[in-house]
Length: 293
Image (cartoon, rainbow, N blue to C red):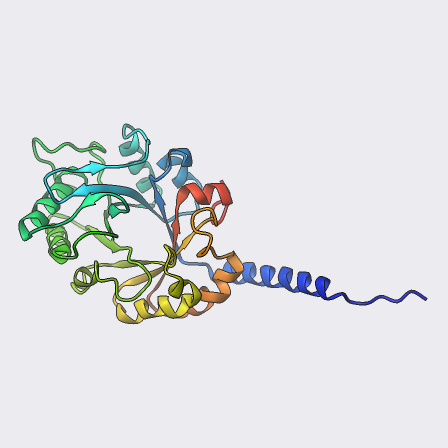
């Protein structure tokens, strides 16, 4: 009579498959909340319109305005033609998708050396990308208006970003309904000193916590790191920021089941959990982490 044993390797494989199915079921049942994605870092990621047509994202963050604060402004979209982005912004907004402009990033030339420079940058953002408009200030996206500004401040001096936030928020008096959405994208180690003063203003509706970028202490204790941010800013919606592919950050990459069991099953229970921030559209398109196209 044949004897059928259970090999340890088979048991491990079955357990892994079961966990994967359970995680997928958990994500499907609860939903990960809003999904924000960064766009503009790779020419091969496709157009902004194509990103919005996936139906996967509720927010697209155009990145980056990589130089500011010293009289020079640079919009770096990594080879994307700027012509047509304005029409794509309006198209995305017509589908109910929020479109933000991110300032800062890695490798740019930006800082705010004085209160006057903060005022000048706010004035520029208002007239170049938001609802303003003044002769002599070019509008790269034409008459399209982004919904707000994301602070991705990853280098340089820390001063005056709180003043920039207050200046930008002050323009809300010119809006009828809606207004300027302010978001921040800090490193996961709490606090992020570059953004601490700005976040202390209480004007940021959303905080995208980057659970990647080389901070292994955060990557080993993902929920504990994220939870510090959620506890510190109960009035903001706090997002879990993840890379969409190991190609983006092999050490920080989380398979979907690890994302669910390591962070989301706990984070979703908190009242100020906002959703996921995905870095970025290019890697998501390649790896199908969130989107299927």
